[in-house]
Length: 73
Image 1 (tube, helix red, strand yellow):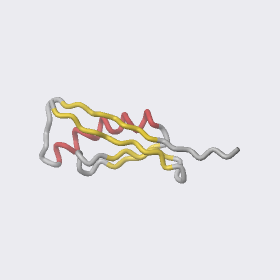
Image 2: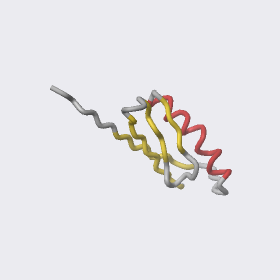
Image 3: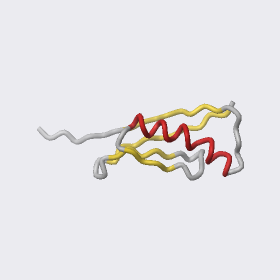
Image 4: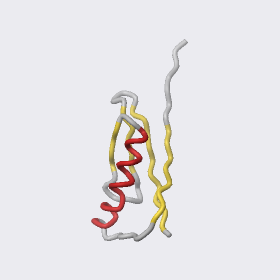
């Protein structure tokens, strides 16, 4: 079974999460909610794989998230 990595990064300036994957061409999404973004990726990934000629019956998504914040004291 194929596994695709999806990276979630927090854009502090825009106040949104951004999802992108080097392994799923065209996958770039954003949302203010991490949970909502994960759901959008689950829905969009199969369509993008099919459009890119990589149809998969079953596959796994590996989600990685990163958020950094500057804390002023």
